[in-house]
Amino acid sequence: MKVRRESRPVTGFRAAGLHAGIKESAPDLAMIVSDELASAAAVFTRSSVVGAPVEVSRERVARGRSRGIVVNSGISNVAMGARGIRDAKAMTRIAARAIDCEEEEILVASTGVIGEPLPMDVLKVGIPRAAAALGAEGWDDAAEAIRTTDTHAKIASTRLAIGGHLITIQGIAKGSGMIEPDMATMLSFLATDARIAPGVLRGMLRRVADATYNCLSIDGEGSTSDTVVLLANGAAGGSAIRRGSREARSFEDALRAICEDLVLQLARDGEGATKLLRVEVEGARTAAEADRAARRIGNSLLVKTAVFGGDPNWGRILQTLGAGRIGWNPETTRVRVGGVVVFSKGRSAGPAARKRAEKAHEADEISIRVELGMGRHSARLFTCDLTYDYVKINAEYTT
Image (cartoon, rainbow, N blue to C red; front, side):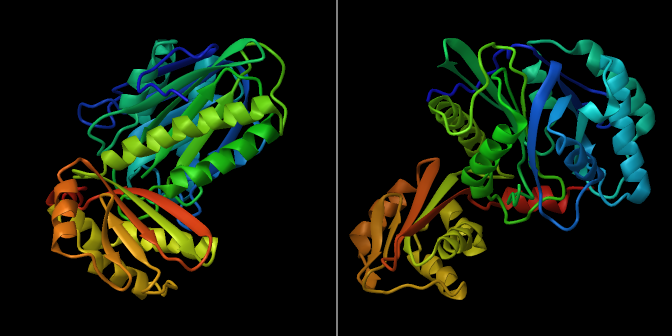
């Protein structure tokens, strides 16, 4: 499936992004709207501390239909009590009036600093401005407006033919730190002009999220605001995509390709990151153990700093597996770094292999693959290295 990292018009959808005044100068307010009521599905953080927008949107998306979403960056509207709920609902009410729909048909998301109130006087003016700016070509502006510490916007799109109709899927995402989605700070918004019933859409998004967004970690810190929303308005025409059909499989494959591309973009742009790190674990006794092993490796501060320093230190990889009580057999375990075997049959592969692995670290993408030889289960994780700049960014986040 060919994915393009650029925006395309999605039939029946309009988007906008602008500077409303939450941030000092950068874009900070976005809207994505379907011209007609669309099927809606979403996955959210499973953190016990969640933002007011998550509470409001979680309740509304359960109805299975939505006209769109309003999103602000800069302030996350988390830990604000009753005021937070009132402000989140006020955002949707203002947006609904601006596009002439029911308040319950609008979802809401916020990202940024925790524990500060939203400047509602700014949003009361900004949201109608965003609604007035809505257009088929507004996706790039929306992608810019949802950023916080990201260095650039993330966008991906693809097209496929289903039943003689050309279907478009488009997604945008933000997230650079405080990222280890568990749904499901990470936000992603997806739109398609395919016709899909809410129940079918919900199952697709859950499976795709588990295979993509939930295989992402920047720093092992799950956000209070993780949200992925998928809207399908059917504007491309044709019959509804049925559960279990060939068309459903084709659409889900395309959706997964979009989401995986967005995840790779997020991992590459981790706060201060210089390298994309792919972790693969094979041969675990159970699926849960494979997942735990991948996360032990990908979230290990020692492993991530070794990747930054170009050090193929397999000892750090085995150490974190042992600390996680991962089952392994020294005689069957093999560790590859950058495609080079650095540990096998209970011992180091030697200095020549180490040199080759050090050379592999010169690339901006590095892989760690561990073959445990204990079973048939596997897992993967997309992450990045840990650099001096990560510490600097987060030490100064609210200052």
